[in-house]
Length: 235
Image 1 (cartoon, rainbow, N blue to C red):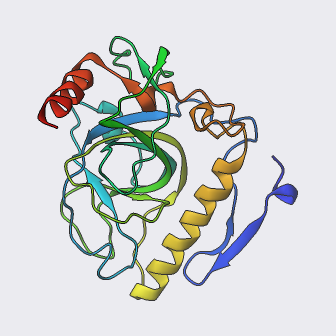
Image 2 (image 1 turned 180 degrees about the vertical axis):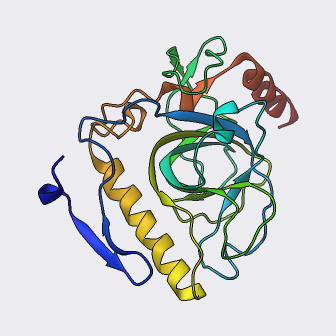
């Protein structure tokens, strides 16, 4: 994509920034990366200070070896949440039922037959995420903080979350003040929205014309089937 055809915007701290990331046909290797785990509590400042709530995942280099070799910064892509039917934002997409997919975190998603559960199912949302130390807050622990581009009516701590990291937006940086940080984060969100609207970046499983195969996001593995059956039994 030529620079002339790329829409841009401007923020106080970063100046001129592109609103689209990556080529129109879709992500290129090494993307997408995969990451998964239970949603854990984070630093508690996303909603309180920034007005941008985050869902955090544990950073485990043994489970996601790629995360130690990529630069700290802001990324974007798709997230799926295994939400119970009682959650107000339960909005399932068809899940695939197959053996666990390959362990290569950057490999393509597995395929399988469509299946949904009445008690818990995967819901898919666009996301932006920060991987790093967040220099503005001077963290001493590397974290993965995910902001789902959707308004939630209830929290979902403990829910299983899967991430398909489609691309890199920018490096992490320090800021003179909170307003500059918030402005750049909001711009990151707009970059993700616009970039993921393109058919080559939109997952097929949403059923709205997307062309990217994101079956892994909604794949119901044998282990998760057992959890769902346990939820059914407790109803």
